[in-house]
Image (cartoon, rainbow, N blue to C red):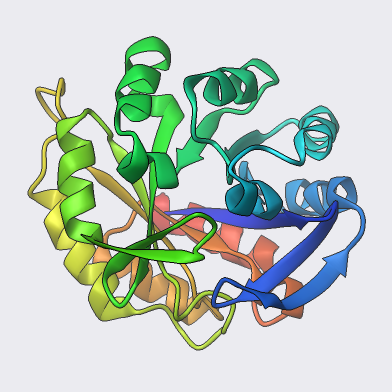
Length: 253
């Protein structure tokens, strides 16, 4: 299982929100590059970057910070938040982002996903399934739709999407534990799907939200997720990132 540390950006700073609430923010650093270097030194092979202002405004707001991170660390970066058009996807990939994470556009304009897969390949496109009580939230989690996470996964797999990030918003930033039952349900659902254009292989699922400890990661691994995104646990010291990455390497061996 891949352990992917997160950098959430707001007003140029590294922050964490509790349950996606912009009024419940904790600032952990004013230097995203320094944080990225710490993650790289701990052994991370990928960083999950979220442009929180972009997610809310509908267009990228932290391009300069993302470019600085890309120049500073020799590891992959995936970027989400405000990525809603083909031009924005092209721009993100052109500056060196390995893969983009698209959420709102998957509901608002699925053609964006289809275009991205056709022009850039399925490996470079991830769909975020950010759920509140099972329903997908969009626009930086400020609006909740009537679309379920499972039904959106089905639609996007039919469009060729191979990888999804599932987040239970109620657990995000709380350190309370992932919603293991919901993650297991999503994993079972994913295992039954075949992305369009793929003769073999199924849908891959990454879990995000609520992770506090190595034990939580072990349990997620037993469910069969491809990876886990960790944020607050690393910043608040309840999870040692280097130890978690070493454990994951040993578990894969």
